[in-house]
Image 1 (cartoon, one colour):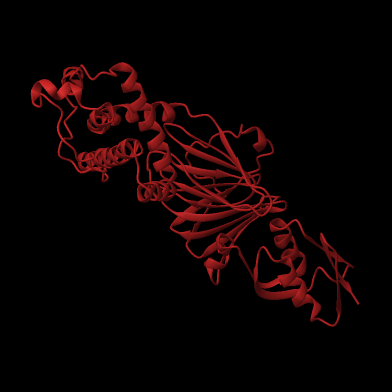
Image 2 (cartoon, one colour):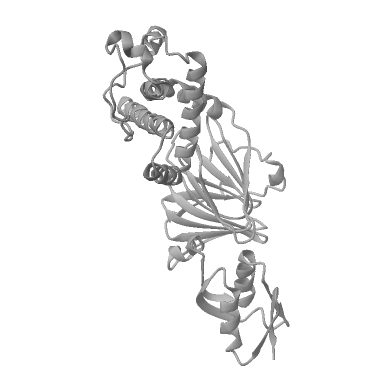
Length: 374
């Protein structure tokens, strides 16, 4: 079974290498439609961007090594590594055919050296794809062996999504910041501020752990949302299960949290799909069922869903998304309870609802909405 998985992985790498290399050649003289298709292909996955840049580098390196095409690269590669196989005949992305026209004088074997350079380069996608597996493998081994911390952050109102090298995807909500690194035996994420949705690629040999200031969340092949709040950490499981351990990390900003030894802490709780856990600053862990777990991740569609939530909580959520802030005045106002679905980018929609309450007064200015008791 492991041999089949490894073979499938190599075939997948091969396909990615071919596609990226083919685009390198197509962009030598692309049509308008091909330019549009190329941009769409890049947007499909961050991996496509990475592979294209890599294959462009390979193509440029080959140009420098043998710009006049005097060497039989396939023969050289076969002599170096018997695992290299020819890709001749394997389909690539469509390449525009060379312009029709009369053949040069002296056509035949002797005339082959006079083919225009741009057309002559079209055989290089096959060579580049052939060597890509070995180079990508070495690159992956190096990055997994010792991969430094990388950081991502979002500004107010901004959301970002990115794919890690292991295939996991992180969606980062507004006003959030994370640091992550991959190694040979673990995948670690520090949610330093804000909220993120994790879709974890299954890798039994490298556990995926998310650290906040209050907890460690460990998952393998699952999808879950983590919100690092000032007063604690909220974890909602969309698919699969996660293990949550209350554990204070005061030095999380320096990324020097000691790694777990892999044994379950007696305080660890297993949390499944459609369940939400809360870890308070003091370490208290509670778990409860969620009526509709999609409400928790509605922020990906820039919606805010509240079910019997205090106005203090609702306003705090709105203020994460917009430079136009909402301020509550009066001791009795923050505890009011409301239910509703709102556009995260439209604080006026909340103000309009509150203005209908005859016991509340709503005042507007350019950058502030003030809600107080009448």
